[in-house]
Image 1 (cartoon, helix red, strand yellow):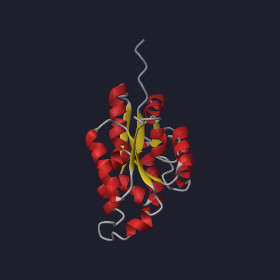
Image 2 (tube, one colour):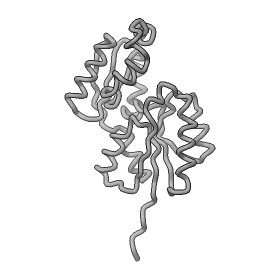
Image 3 (cartoon, rainbow, N blue to C red):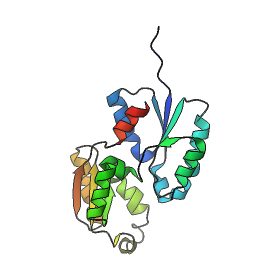
Image 4 (cartoon, rainbow, N blue to C red):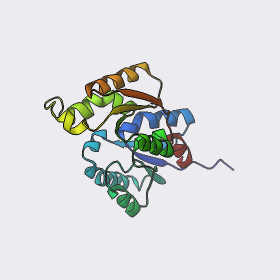
Length: 199
């Protein structure tokens, strides 16, 4: 009897996770996992995320055995989960990628110790200037920095990889916000076991 063919699985993900998903897929040999991403810039307008995810789900249902979503709630106020419940699709647990990279319990502990820190991932370290600095208009209106970031007391870079260039970019981001930086090596956190489970 020939071996059972693995299910064809689609991952609908935030573009900020694409590099990590593809790295885990390759590392673990999860060839039946297919990936489609929405632009990470949607985080600047999270109310748009649920409808865009729904469009991806409905377009993909006829072609895949299973569909999973790799987004946290990401500021949608429960709207993403409402869409996923209606569509019968599971997502990775957690409010955002910081929590599932750091681990839900670790992230909760970090926030309980000090809720005044701004978080970066590898993706955000790499794209801070475009997504945050320019995305929030700080390049044109520097006075907004104090309005948007005045209550923060530090930056925590949750690093998925050990990469001196990414640390340098995180240092630059913290410097632009005039905040101290802490680097925490998380690896892929809860993302890797989730992908292995759904493959």
